[in-house]
Image 1: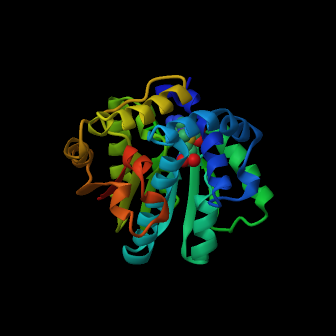
Image 2 (image 1 turned 120 degrees about the horizontal axis):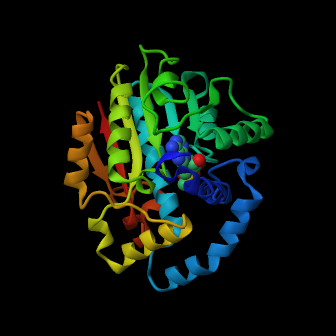
Image 3 (image 1 turned 90 degrees about the horizontal axis):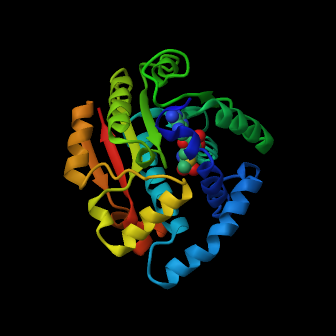
Length: 280
Ligand SMILES: C[S@@+](CC[C@H](N)C(=O)[O-])C[C@H]1O[C@@H](n2cnc3c(N)ncnc32)[C@H](O)[C@@H]1O
């Protein structure tokens, strides 16, 4: 039995995986039939939301993805990060894109629950372009230690090189206790490296006051057939929780901050989500 409703979350990876492919952020071999079906099923509702000035699910997914890419690039280029663990990577194309770009200078590990990890391994093989330093491992983010834990995986990395941990599309599906425990685990693992950076998207209660953002969260909840947790009322509360988990620095970024530089960060949909940038 998986903790925190993990089994409920997995199908959403097919949808987001399809969105990344459709928008040129992934390889066509990482698209699935389920992803295409979900995409087509949600397209009319997305178009209707956009007509009403509400957030468009695809657009805010793209905004969060682009900001995480941007912050990860900065961490690699300016903060000595040369190892990445993308927890709950699903069918994301980020590992492929970053290893294409940084080559031998980067070790990129995609981590997910065993069934998804196995599928991703096969699909990456089908792309015919997986870099030798790019691999997929079985990790359950809810485990403290032992086989399948992040701690065990991190012990295989080079402790003299910086590490970034990423979660995208994960945090709001877990309850507050699970999220705090997960962040504490991440901070502990990152403490074993000279530079430790954590990047993630998050939806906040304070952003959910407007009809626009209520619609975004309602769409997510319907999508996973269950509750989306809005753990924190605002950025300050989220930042303190990250400090309590063991991060020395924590900032919440709004995609709109990057509207002048990142093409997918303009517009209302980009206001529906924040991005955590935290460091040990
Ligand atoms: C919404 S998808 C996001 C996938 C990817 N990050 C993206 O943005 O396209 C959620 C992912 O979380 C994974 N997941 C769910 N529970 C998990 C857990 N306890 N540990 C690791 N991964 C988990 C699912 O298998 C799925 O791939």
